Image 1 (cartoon, helix red, strand yellow):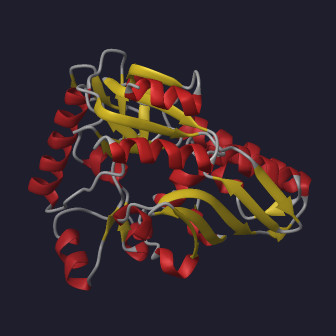
Image 2: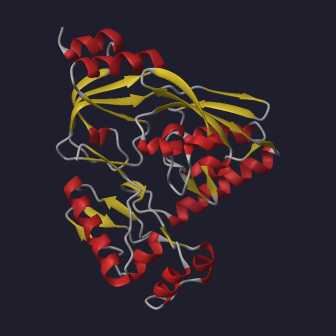
Image 3: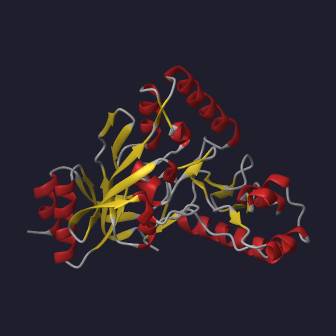
Length: 320
C-alpha cells in the first residue's frame, strides 16, 4: 500500500495530499503539506506516528494553527492536526483535550460559574498549543491554574505534573521535547456565572479595540523583552524613556518598542506591521512566508541596532 492508502485505512477521508497550509493557519500563509491528516483519538495519533516512523517521514503536530508561520515550500512529511475536542467539568476540576479551543473552554467554565480562565476568551488557539507556549493575556497565563498534562511520550501516555513542565514567560519544557500534549487538567475556583460572563464580554471588547482583527496574522509576533538585571535596566534607560509600569515589571512591551522604532505600517510585499498594534504582522492578502521573514528580520535588526535589544519570536516556524 502507498502511504496515502495506509493513512486512509486509519483515517478514511481525513487524509489529503499536497494540502495548502494556508488553509490551516491564521496567517493564511503556507505551501503544501505532502500529507495532511486530522486525528480524533490517541489511538489514531499513535498509528499515524507509527506509519511516519516506518517510512522515515518527518511529522509536525499542531492544534489551531493560530501561532504558526508555514514555509512557502510547505512541509515534506505528515502534518497532523489534533482534533480531540472533548472536555469535562466536575466541581472545580476541569479536564480538556488538547484540541479544545481555549476560548470555548473559557466560555464553558464561566457559564459553569468557575473562575480562573476568563482571560483566555481572547486566545485564538487550542488548549494544547496554549499550554505548550504558556500562552497568556490580560494578566493570565496557562500555567496559573494548570495541575497537570497528559502527553504522548515514546508511544506511551504519561501524566506530567505542573512542576515538571518548567513554565516561564511563553515557555515550557514541552517546547524542548518530543512530547505531544493530549489533554490538560485545571483547578478553578467557584465564582458568579453572571459576573464571569460580563468579564468575558469586557475582555472581548478590549481585544477588538486594541488588536487588528481584519487580516491574517499569528497574533503577537515577538515575546515582550525581559530585563534580567539592574545594569541592563540602566543601559536601556540611557537609550529610551521607559514607562514606569514596564520598569517595575522588568518587561518591555514588544509592540511599544516597535512603535518607538517608527515601524508601524512598514510593509514588505504583502506583509505589514499593523497600524493598530506594533507587535502584529499582518497578511494584507498577498503575503508569502518570505515576506514575513524579511519583515521580522528588519524589525529585529532595528531593535538590536537602536536599543541593543534582541527580540525573540513567539511564532512557531514550520517547514523552514
